[in-house]
Amino acid sequence: MVDPRNSSLTPGAERLLRVARIIVRAAALIVPRDRRDDWLREWDAELWHFLAKPGREGRAVPRTAFPLAWRLIGAVPHAIWIRRNDWRTEMILQDLAYAARGMFRRPAFATLVILTLGLGIGVNTAMFTVVNSVLIQPLPYQHSERLVFMYGSFSKFDRASVSPPDFLGPSASPPPSARPRGRG
Image 1: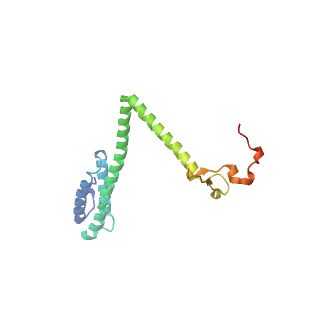
Image 2 (image 1 turned 90 degrees about the horizontal axis):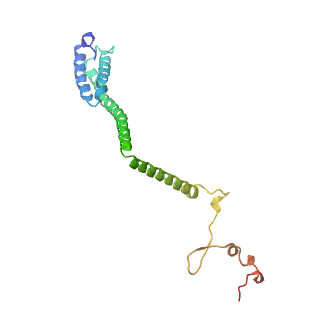
């Protein structure tokens, strides 16, 4: 922390600095212990620099208090940000270490889980490929939006596919002499 004996703050600014340090120390409880001292030194230097800035010495304490309070509000989000970043890396490393210990403790179960995940991912990829190519992507024909599906209607079934002779009509059917005859 900044040594107050070497500072050139007015008595009012020193009082503000003491109050600000109390608030920053309260916010420091959020910061991880291994980074807390550095964080406190950084914020102490920031506050001292703000109060010792040329042109602020002659200001009245109330005119300096509001900008200082506004600056102190930033200590809490900064502490939370440091904690969150620290949590991310610590948590990820803890999770990876726990997973590795579990894999080595029960290798058969780990193999089963890995194979199940691989199979599930492979099946999902294959299904998405089929659905994408059949339903989502346009057909690989020119004017594919003009393609139609034709069906015939019969008494027993609602729909049935249409054979080429039915599609072309009676004029395209072979003459009766060319039709196969059954054994009689």
